[in-house]
Image 1 (tube, one colour):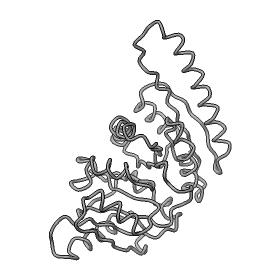
Image 2 (cartoon, one colour):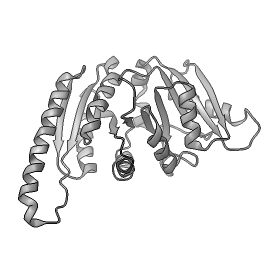
Image 3 (cartoon, one colour):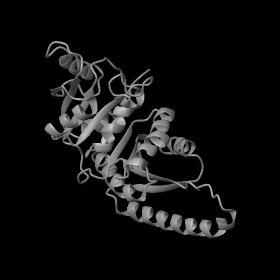
Image 4 (cartoon, rainbow, N blue to C red):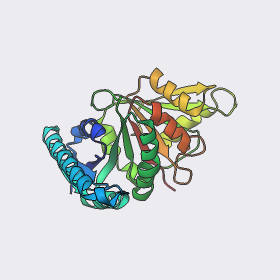
Length: 277
């Protein structure tokens, strides 16, 4: 089966934007899309309301599925819609076995409480359980197009990419983007000590082809999340890449709270790439 991109289409307000962005990423390679909608039936506290509420939920679900099928027909790449109604992690695992996606894509709405819930309850468990790269697309992201300026945030510690991350090599090559490595200097070391090290770590990871030009952008005197966002703005990046380390999720510098803080304010898509254990 040809590789695909799997879009988790559980937020109606974000599904269309995320699907169009994922289609733009995969279009240079002709990758197909799978739009997975998980029917998450809520617990009903009032048994007397079960029938009425269930009917309304069924109508809403039918409307959602009709909208997703219409969206799939409008996308510039082949796309299909899959519906599931079990546990999210199980549904995603089943979809991964079926579609063999290179990455999972999820949209982020403007609701901050919902964002935290998605990170804690859906994104992190799916990332850990599947080991697949995860692309998070905020509502503020610009019009869908392959990235032209990619910022890779590095914490100055060596890393090796997991096999699932290395499988993105052809997709990454197809973007023909400019790449910058951002290093947020919290070490207090002499200027220019850890930044070149971070640059060398990214090159040694083979995230990019060996001949790819790499620029270095260093930020000092900023908190990690603020420094990453400043680097993204200053370099006019249209995609941010973070390395997801297995034990501490994103290492000593980019731990969960920093990642959540970046996602709360990032106006650009963020790609989480699992590192090897």
